[in-house]
Image (cartoon, rainbow, N blue to C red; front, side, top):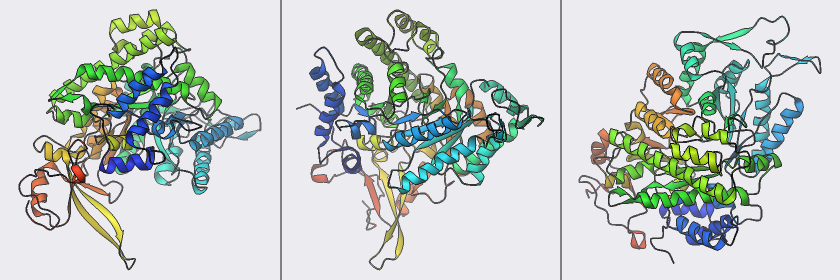
Length: 606
């Protein structure tokens, strides 16, 4: 029996039962299953000890492993990793090897990212056959078609990230196929700033209306005697911005910044991210994910730093163990992941925590606290990985040169000295994933995202007894609003600059990457987005925007904070109250104190 055991409730319990529980098991039974499976990696009589410690962290809701860990732990073939990056090479054998790797990896539930820049452009000469290349986009289309077949055959929808460097000869075709012709529908797409073009140089080219030469590995462009081609940097930028504003795609992956901070710069370059963008990976790299549930460490309006340190250390050890008990989909992924031992410890519930601390999401006080918090997590996790290296050995590809990487220079000097002396267990340790359904299970906000909206209108399609389709509208009031009516904000109440500032602050303490959506109000101007995005490019390894209403009618309609009181006063339809999991609700019914003027579904004033 443990003290203060967490239990999912409401929507969180439904998600847990549908996605992560096995054979009707309870929350505590699932925690025991996962703890037992991951602790099996321990040696020297430590299995029982760490099974107990892992179980306590899970059961108390302080550490939440990624969804694949919940689903796969304890199965005969336990594939526990969320995502992967697959390479592609410039040959027919390389094309079809990548398709095989993608198909097998997707088949075990993994998302897959790939940078297709190693494939020569459309029209380039192929000496071996005397023909010409069909280009990088044609290989992406092959991937996409395989996705159609897998889905139609009863498989789950693929999660793919397809990207191409900004100076690849096929960059215009790539953007046209996805954005104008509406193809590649099984994938997200991103344009990559490659390692050989600095972010500052790209900014300069855009601002000064310079040109980007389109080339492929120094080969002559297209067929012999074809003049070299280039593209206006500003034209390319404007197309990216306008489409991101209009539809949320494409994003930009900053390979230059990612590789500048790469801890294994001496070993392998980082070539692409996973589909959600939280981890830049080398070829055959993997995402091994788990998150600290930040609100659990707030006691009486203050953060308990000692408890947080305890959970960081156990979280790092847990994820390191996952690499040893995992069943890998293909040998190349197993070899690389055990060679580099990359893990991704993140957080969830940042906004929930800030509210519990009495801080607004985009206040100077919140920014300063988040900076301090992530510096603490960074240095604690690195110190833990060093201790694991002393106990179990450093990752096989370790070299003392790692201490000189761009990211290592952001850690304490004592950390860098210990890395040189003792090595470190993991090549990279930290990430910021979206945490989607796992944060819903925990009843907290996702990743570092703000609450979507403290009050919103939910739209649903229904069918009556006569099979006539009709729509319903429900006003939803979140528990965060009930608890913090003077302080809570939604994603669209926060200026995009403040969203970017939060990502910038967090990214400097994260060795992998940060997945964050920058929410834009519906009337946000394109030229304002252009200037803001270009300004913040050097501080981010990836960036994604979503403008309210840009994909048609949405299932949830944000109610601005400034309009909440009037909407509540005038609403005549159904109202729902999202009750936080931490409330005492015997029998599933809760008595809550509501702001004056709220009405129930019968329009009675409460």
